[in-house]
Image 1 (cartoon, rainbow, N blue to C red):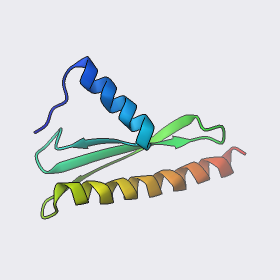
Image 2 (cartoon, one colour; image 1 turned 180 degrees about the vertical axis):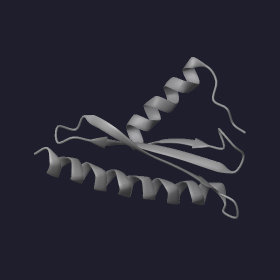
Image 3 (cartoon, helix red, strand yellow; image 1 turned 60 degrees about the vertical axis):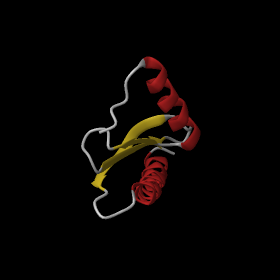
Image 4 (cartoon, rainbow, N blue to C red; image 1 turned 120 degrees about the vertical axis):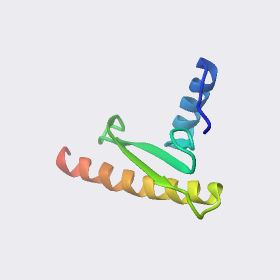
Length: 89
């Protein structure tokens, strides 16, 4: 397991999440498990919720699986953000 420790490491993860639009936790909670979270934004671009997915990477190379999970999270994020815009124009 790769547990993130220390303020500097946490802040670097936050900066990266802001830059790429999602946060990853590869094998941080369980070996072979990857977690990802992305914000759902309102029409003004403010976060109002989050999409979180966790899945087992068993049988997949971790970098490829992480990329696929990120694509899925971003797709879900886009759908929820679009839905939020329809509910609150």
